Image (cartoon, rainbow, N blue to C red; front, side, top):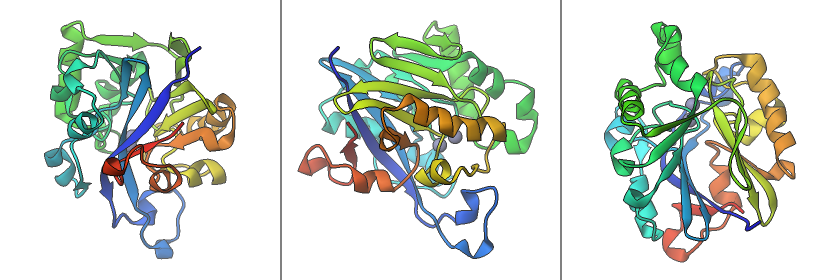
Length: 259
Ligand SMILES: [Zn+2]
Ligand SMILES: [Zn+2]
């Protein structure tokens, strides 16, 4: 089986984020703990998969995030035409993972049954459950379903040889992580099943959560899916940009290669 290449594209960050926003139990004196925002590119020969679509400048700045680069422009800088992408995997529908629909107008979006049920159902009556969703993104996803451009998955599913989806739940009802065959072994893109390395390593929950037990069990599942613990890539950790190399000098600070 041909191994996949996997890239993390940083498009925004939140430099002054209080550490208290990242953990359920925290010390008020913990200070700041920044996070980064990514979309991911998976590549095998001429085939490309995009994982998550990020937010737009306007959507990010309205929430106080620092927008660095449109994911579509970074893809173009990598020689990938966003309009030519046929398949996008949405790990979950939070605003920082499911915006910018216009960049991938014709693509099929892969998501879990339970994620769209969650994002359009009774849990959204509660502000604390809905506030990480963007109403426009949710409505746009529903329209995409009605255009025949959504593909639903239920639980764990292999969508191509060496590329599988795994529902983890926890953070949202239908969050899915990815397991990818690479030259280093099985690599796992956790997305928000683990925001930071610290969540997995210290078994601590992130405060935006649907089910705490599923989130903590999920950390262990991520480790179980990967060939080694360092092949689990968290969804928002700034260490990712430090640990991995840029694929070329022009992409320094914007893209790292994970495999
Ligand atoms: Zn999330
Ligand atoms: Zn997120």
